[in-house]
Image (cartoon, rainbow, N blue to C red; front, side, top):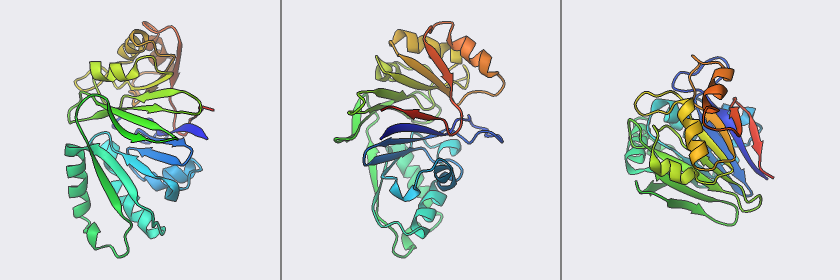
Amino acid sequence: MEQIIFLGTASAISNKNQENSHLFIESGDIKILVDCPGNPISRLIKANVDPLEVTDLVITHFHADHVSGLPLLLMDLWLMGRKTPLNIYGLEFTLDHAEALMELFDWKKWPDFFKVNFHNVKEIENVTIINNEWLTVTTSPGKHLVPSIGLKFEFPVSKKVVVYSSDTEPNQMISNLAKNSDILIHESAGSAFGHTSPEYCGKIAHQENVRKLFLIHYSNNLSEEQLVSQARKHFDKDVVVAKDLMVIELN
């Protein structure tokens, strides 16, 4: 199975219908959690995903609406009896802060805790962090208030390419990552520093020959119709406003 589940789609402020933005990516034996705000375990269960089957966690950047659930995620997996290692990927800045956060909970003294493998991602363009028969994952730096990465997922069975911008203002390295992709999932919080407006998301999708655009991390000050209308000023293909627990099946 190759699929993407939107576990949350809200920007920094969640609401009764939306959790903060994070994703679940599945391809064969590889099951990736992208970011971990709130209570990731309950969100995975609500999406009919067994949390113990998650193989990898990618933290795109160290902001509370993307990483606040990390201590709860690791503690709950431990209490659920996890034995297999968990790989966690992120920039050095991100992982240093993540480990410091976990130290507040004295996590290294938790008995019989499963192994966590931290993988520092270089803050340069086109870094491959996972490459196997099920999936290839490549990162490039975004431009945000703190160091951040966007992600490209290449699925070998469906031959689909999906790109997730994470939080970023318009940035050529993220645009390069999106070039000729089947699906671009782009943050659309607005034109403030570190973010991208829905209109500019459409411009990027058009310039990079994207086939389908999903808007995520959007402002609730705009209606769904307004979000789509702005993106379509430059992009005349399919535009979708992502919703919590929406599933994209790739094969």
